[in-house]
Amino acid sequence: MKYLFFLYILALILCYGCEHTELDCYEGGSSVYFSKKSFQIMGDTIRYDTWGVIDGDIKEQTYKLPIYLFGTVTDYDRKIKIRTELCDVDTLRAEVNVDFRPIPTEVILPANSNETSLEIVMLRSEKLKKYNRIFTVVIEESEQFNSEYNWRKDNDGNSYFLGHSMTIIASENFPKPWWWEWNGVRYFGEYSYLKADLICTLCNIHRTEFIDKTVIPDSKLKYYGKKVQRWLNAQESPYLEEDGTPMVMGVDVQD
Image (cartoon, rainbow, N blue to C red; front, top):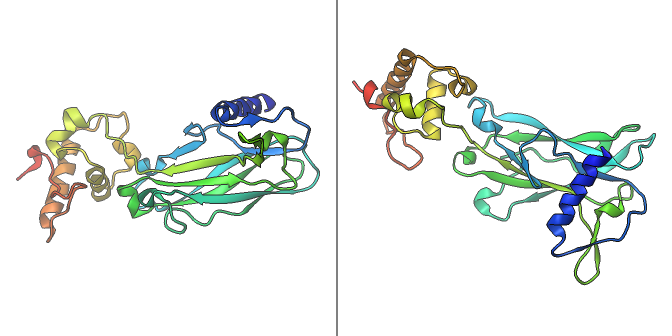
């Protein structure tokens, strides 16, 4: 655990070394930090792409971000203060009760434990079809967690607390099936997220099955394509693609 933490601290030093000077030594205390294990993470960013392979009728998921202790385990509960920061870019800014439920402002680190987690409830916003949605969670300074490892000095020698943070990018990254280019275009036309979503919805196909390595027989692909094209033909107004053009299936399923 300590070895992993020292690697984490080293990364922070490298990131901030050009602008800040690390304090000379560690003099005790306890620190808590977000774990990066088992998540798709670059730096302090989690790319939360799992919406893309989750069926379209699922609108809410609970996500647990692990928090670990560096320092002394105690025989009493301790509170970890949490702050939520929103993105400055309007189209990318995740919204409370639109993209995620309100984030707890406190998390309990149980007695006799060196780990806990921040529970985040993600919501599937319609805006994800056009833009990724971004927000950041930050561990704040407190009397109980005030380690020297969390302190830096700016170029003027002023000390400030660096709360460990994690930026979460929510995305509707629905991967193109591996077979689409060589056997899907003839039945479905050019790939788009909206088209793949509509195919799975109308044909009751799980997204994980749709992008699986298993070969889907031509007869099924043709059936799916014809079913979706007939649905498109039955709409009073054209069902539009992401670029605003009418959606159409491939040439081999046209009547």
